Picture 1 (spheres, helix red, strand yellow):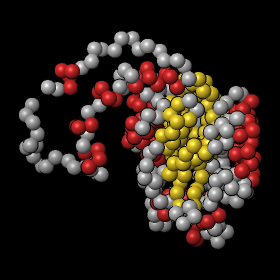
Picture 2: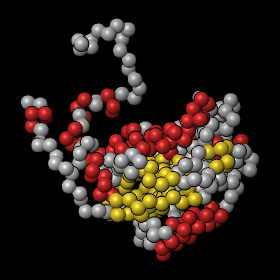
Picture 3: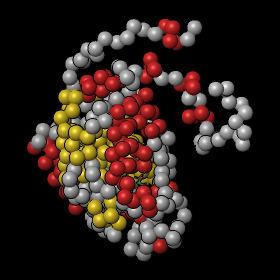
Picture 4: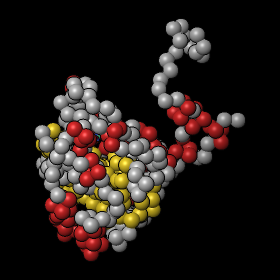
Length: 335
Ligand code: ING
């Protein structure tokens, strides 16, 4: 007997669930200079927070590595004026960031913040934290997909040494917060469909993503002109295919000679962009969302427990790379 034989009667027109309104903001940053002090950056983050709070925002999302310049663009060991450890936070909140935590709590606004994490036992991660409106830390995410390279590559105009400066995170988690279920991902994660599906399988209705994306992609510059298209493409697809909201937030603009994509946005489970930043500097874009809208997709077209076929998807977890068919097509079913 196949699953189809026991298919439940088709869903009637989807009954609207009670709304779960939430006002969110993308808290986009422009460039952070090589030696810009954290106190200066935190002042910029607080300014965005206060602007958002004045507009009734309940959750603001900041970019990846939002406290410092994007230091993986350099082989830091060869930069006499740079100290690698100085880019990492050993505590969160710490001396420089407690001002942000305190002000957010005062204003009753939650936030997600990307930063370089150094654990007490010396492990380094590209981390994102989720803080609730009462100032409590809800959860922490460590970037799973690290792009770029590990060794100095002189052929590149600038380096992308995330695989040198960070260790791999190893889980996609979702947390109950903001009257819904919230997940986080970071930058390159947004290009991999597994990211959104893993979080949606954990019940995520809202996925918060910070990014630093150079417009120039050294391994294939033909992609440069497509950076903005690809950025929105992957997040809109991830939102629609998983029936969730996605907030994508850039650190953009010309940072230490590297032009980086801005175009932060808030995306609906419909896949539509609800709000978008229009500059490549410090800017908020806000949207009134309703987490109940997710069910219009997760309880119909993308009702996972009804329509997904995990028993067919085995290669998704057993294989890392592709295994093409042998030179002949023997072994495939006829027809
Ligand atoms: N940055 C990039 C990203 O995935 C990259 C890596 C750069 C990809 C340029 C493509 C083009 O958006 C991070 N930090 O993951």
